[in-house]
View 1 (cartoon, protein in one colour):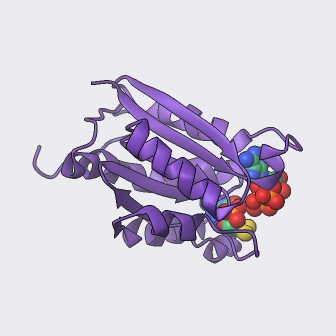
View 2 (cartoon, helix red, strand yellow; view 1 turned 60 degrees about the vertical axis):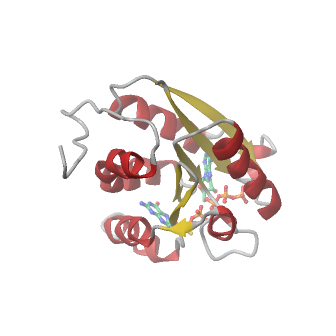
Length: 175
Ligand SMILES: Nc1ncnc2c1ncn2[C@@H]1O[C@H](COP(=O)(O)OP(=O)(O)OP(=O)(O)O)[C@@H](O)[C@H]1O
Ligand SMILES: Nc1nc2c(c(=O)[nH]1)N[C@H]1C(S)=C(S)[C@@H](COP(=O)(O)O)O[C@H]1N2
């Protein structure tokens, strides 16, 4: 089965066309490097509005059937940063280890890593992961948490992902 992966860019300015969405592109590029199994993307760019974020996450999970949904942007402390709230509102179960690890690893790159409230959670058969908005944060964060993603999808009944092991080695304890 071809995996579907949602890429959701949450940015007032990227959605208004003020700048090109380099972060969504970076997610697609990074996943293309990691994954050896077939997959297709479901891609959307929306402003920092909680109801729109929730609608997009629900659509990608329930209607499009995405096993994995990666968001970028809106994780900080600013008034309009509400991606973690939207994620929590649509998830049945939170996966706090993802945010903990990404913040810890990000501190190697920027002292402002602790300003991201990025989290992750499960909605149905979808794993939703928040990444910060900066294009360079995408690879920094995904390199850290992606080894656990394929097994997480196995556990929730999502698509079976395989990786190009020279660049990304997934860990499946029962394999
Ligand atoms: N999707 C994106 N594509 C390209 N650059 C981005 C993107 N998101 C953020 N950036 C860059 O990172 C910087 C800091 O991110 P910031 O969190 O302010 O962006 P943002 O949340 O997208 O902002 P806004 O929603 O106000 O447009 C931005 O000024 C921009 O240069
Ligand atoms: N790996 C990584 N994490 C990072 C950053 C980064 O450049 N690299 N930027 C930080 C900054 S400056 C902010 S304000 C927060 C929140 O970013 P967001 O609101 O764009 O999601 O993420 C932080 N986490």
